[in-house]
Image 1 (cartoon, helix red, strand yellow):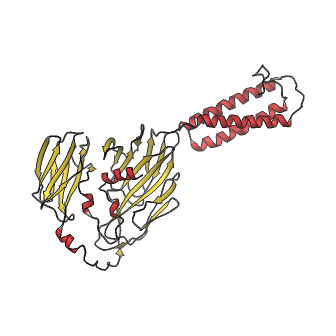
Image 2 (cartoon, rainbow, N blue to C red):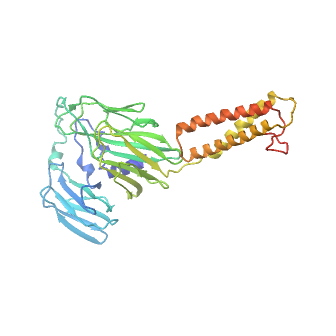
Length: 412
């Protein structure tokens, strides 16, 4: 869990570490420094580096930023908004960006240039004025006013595979753009998928978030800035496939799903614009990108190619054992009964029994491979078992002689 969350947070500006602070504090921008954030609003092969001092309001203009890709180096000065943009970079090449502000060296993590879309990042210098006032007594919190919060663009869905389940994590930002705390008309409430097991709010999340069963509730007042929380749950895997449906009460600006690569794992969703494989912090991941979701719009996500252990053999063995026990019970009840001659009716019963048993075996195989409807599987399996029990009773009633299908005289 920690490894994939670390990758996700690196990928998403490491905002999770901010949420454990006192509610009235704004995020520490230094924690976001040097972390690449893939975006779709830049040309392919472009990286935009913004240099700031302390917070987003203090852009550093005309600051030289150096890019290194192997032995190659390029320097671009920042514009009035503190941004230096590097274009036409070679996809797949590993790059780093650095600058020196007042003797403080700021450097990004190395990362590969993605073939589609661009990357934005911050390089954050220390603000000496903020340091001087950091130890001053905190001002009394302003009273909350009526207002709204919105889901932030750094919200992510993170997937990590286990042996028979998939762990899913939601890293969610709720942004209050006002300068004072706000109380919303309703809390932020959503339900995890129906199949979710063990839903919980991850330690270190904002104390405003809580879980009750599958329901997550985030109540105000919401402090200025970003309220971050993480939700975790497990989803059972059937035949190496997990299907997830999720909606949120507010619009999600950008859909990003991050899955730790395992086996032949693939992500698919009608809301995706593209998927790609990457290596982040040495961890192979699969990424899915979409434009976003409207409020209460359902995300349909399929995770396939998961490693799993087939239980077909075990299930078939259990079925066989059950049928043998049922047959033994009927034989014991009818012990000592006379053995009438074979009849055409008994031959039909044996043929019917073999047909139903083969259908039961096929049903189990299809279920283990994720085929067919789950509700239909359960009802049809119960129907087949019940019919087989009745056939054993009918065969026993017709006599315990050898089955026409087994002329050697072995018991059916």
